Length: 617
Image (cartoon, rainbow, N blue to C red; front, side):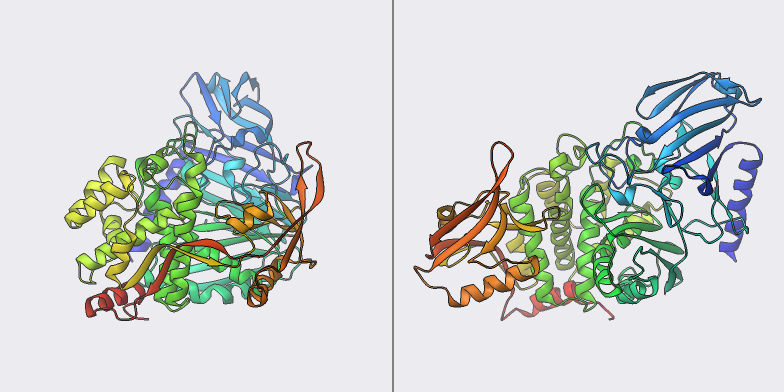
């Protein structure tokens, strides 16, 4: 009853704001798309300024990249309430200055989709972009097409979308129009416009329930080999486990998985998802239900936890996001790092992966943080400089950021004798702050100190604010996990190079020489070498590991080893090159080895149980 009364109150506020013309009224007609362009019409709220600036964002929360969405806008015009044109000056890539704004009636402009932009012109990560396909699918990330007047981002937006009758708009927003060809969404601020994408297509949807929350899965599959029902079935077990992990009920009443499948790689060459408070937008390569369920499950295990951070725990930099001159919070270790940690933790605690599989995932993150990034960089400094100074270090939030949370979780479990975990700390922070109360960046650590014991303060100051190496041996030892930083032995190998995959060439490549051993140096590998054959056999990516395993079982000193590669020369041209040598054992170092101790103490077993097992599976 209280929820219903609150909903009516919010609705009355929205209607009052709209009736007073204290809102943006945006009209988009999807049926009039031409040349992958949409016409946008914005009826302006009442403005008192003589001049005003209308902008599209430089970037949006969750992307951590400057994209300049205004570059997709064309033919921008402003009109007064009588239909006369007003003077407009484009002042930069994203902004237009409008004269006599107190007379402004509406804006009109055209916007291009981002999926078909130039590949060399700072392409947009596809889950943050837009696609306009008149007969099949529209991906509407509104920040790519709708803007705001400076200092007026907290006003209501009424979004009116006209679409073909066979299309359905999948979103977490509520459609207030019963028409088969018209949808109306009322959104209380520009931040929430950005936070709620919509995907229009012939509907293929499924629904799941987690506690009292409705989970929508909407799929666009051009080949029609994947279905919403099939993917829903494949991720249901994970989502139910995540619901239990979060206490049984979610902090949102509705959540939407918008899954756009493509028959080709996008401009960025990657795939993935962009998180939102009430959903996530996916861009993946089309496939079968079985294959995609696995992919979606891996990505969703991270994205879904963003309903906690930053929805219910966020800084002022996020709550009052500056779309013109974005500023970073220093707490990416919490927003992204803890989210990635929970994505693995939930799976081991509810039996979706084994403890050994979990330790393997931790080891992978350790190696990535150690060899792929500056492991001594302050994580708060990394966060603040993620857009510029430390842009190349940003993705360490998914490796070392998760490891910070692992260490913090284990220390909290030990301090409380298994009664208080990282998730409990996050829940306490959410009670203090919540969706409508942001914290100041500098106050969060003090709040954490007040909720925990002194050793947590020391840990955060040394390893998050400071750049000291994380104390893996100590904290993993609490749970009876043996940790070896480095182990060196002589063995046979292909040479210790890193193996990657070039999707354009569709070949395996030598991706890294960081762990190259003496045999690898004798072979003469170079980074970027495309692997054509090994010992005369052409290897598909899926066959490489099994081929190497079989070779290791039979190889002996003095055997000939030959690899044919395609190598790019200084002139940019590629040519075949044969690398060969006689096999010999070389000293090989392996790093960050983890294993469950064979004879853990009762205290270690207690901490291990609290760490790896759910209270009630």
